[in-house]
Amino acid sequence: MEYTVQKLSKIAGISSRTLRYYDEIGILKPARINPSGYRIYGQSEVDMLQQILFYRELGVSLEKIKEIITAPSFDVISALRNHRENLLEKRDQLDRLIANVNKTIAFKERRTTMTDKEKFEGFKQKLVDDNERKYGREVRGKYGEEAVNKSNEKVMGMSQEQYDEVTRLAAKIKETLHEAFKTGEPAGELAQKAADLHRQWLCYFWDSYTKEAHAGVAQMYVDDERFTAYYDEKQPGTAAFLREAILIYTGTRTK
Amino acid sequence: MEYTVQKLSKIAGISSRTLRYYDEIGILKPARINPSGYRIYGQSEVDMLQQILFYRELGVSLEKIKEIITAPSFDVISALRNHRENLLEKRDQLDRLIANVNKTIAFKERRTTMTDKEKFEGFKQKLVDDNERKYGREVRGKYGEEAVNKSNEKVMGMSQEQYDEVTRLAAKIKETLHEAFKTGEPAGELAQKAADLHRQWLCYFWDSYTKEAHAGVAQMYVDDERFTAYYDEKQPGTAAFLREAILIYTGTRTK
DNA sequence: ATAAACCTTTACGCTGCGTAATAGTCAATA
DNA sequence: TATTGACTATTACGCAGCGTAAAGGTTTAT
Image 1: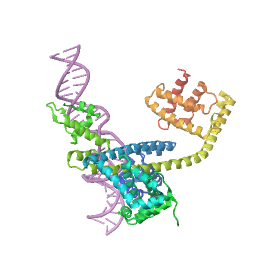
Image 2: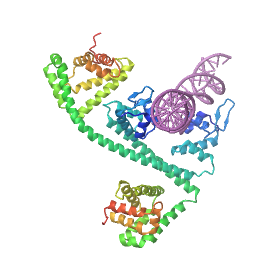
Image 3: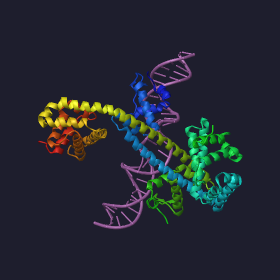
Image 4: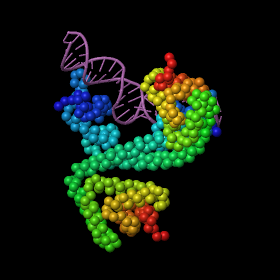
């Protein structure tokens, strides 16, 4: 089978410019050039391109890819390990950036609104009050007086950073959940990731985590319209989906 | 207080090029230009620069920074929130990348250890056979029956790790040699390093190293087209260059 | 025959500067 | 005062990985 730039680009899902560029930098040369000067690729070039695109997906630079595929004895594994180190470092840097941005946002919010401390304190108080009013009795009944008090204490004692982190986590849960919902599979990877994030989130409020308590909260999300509204905002049925995911995650599902 | 580019760049910890660039893109213009065309910055520019560098630290693009600092009513907080979203997305993507790289490494490790095992066995046998066929008689004659047998035994007894090390070493020799060849000086540092690496490599096969034997192998590299081809692959003359380097390294060169 | 759909090469653009190259300015020294 | 050294200036290429013209030749279909 022989391919011109456009044909190959289409089956590979890239642009023809990319193929010409790869030719130019010597990372993938056509099998031959026809009399009109057209680039003609064969099967081995298709295979090679697959390799190239695979490493590209991993974020490896074209230069490194060139080394990998041109030198047959090249140590791919240690190249990848090296690459991973770079990625990890990048992520650390990103984490630091994000933390700083969070701080700045928090600071700006403090300054631009009122003497934010009040606002923050107020919010925390409201959160506690809400929890108390809404679930105080039933949760106290289910999990004990002490646990609820500890949760309230924990919220009131949160630092600005922790609060920021909680907010961020909540956003991530929602995002992941939304993605997961599209798959329609509460047992799928994404949904389970959402459930795990949700566990992390809970741990900011709870002193001790138990699967049963987690499952209980999941049920609340469906029973209480306030939470249902929160999670179903984008897509109706999301709260119920989350409950399913959590039940599977905690292994407390009673079929 | 007034500052020229260099003074300001020093107190701000950036390059003068950066200041000129910021002037060019209109993000920070000097307070005035003196009669000789020098950029002169005042206090307000210093303050502004601090702002710019602050946002730059957060990874905000210069274009966004420009918006932030030029429009007084600009909603910094929502800009930052937006920026944070981007960063979070970037991090998620990084997470996915890292996971994929990990998977690939694991897969490659599994596969290479398997295929290597086969390849390794074959290679070892071939190496021994080749040595035997090519140099068996003459090396036996020169360095004694026992040494050759020991070499063969040594190769066959190599562990996977040792084999890997040998492969790496061989690659490194080739690389160093190639660099050295460009200098054209077999007595140079790089060439001598290559010779030393070559000695290390030999020690994986030989029970006892002697300068004379090393020099003998170097000569073989030039005499035998199989080795010449191996070393001359990238650059003709490399094998001969290596011989010269080794002769100098071993001090057995007869001028 | 003509148009549509290909193909080619050449070359600028994007980000945020680093790094020349070339030339003028200023203060201090021989 | 002439020279030197330490500044300053502008112009412009380079970096990664292509996108996107522009200007022109080729192939295929009508």
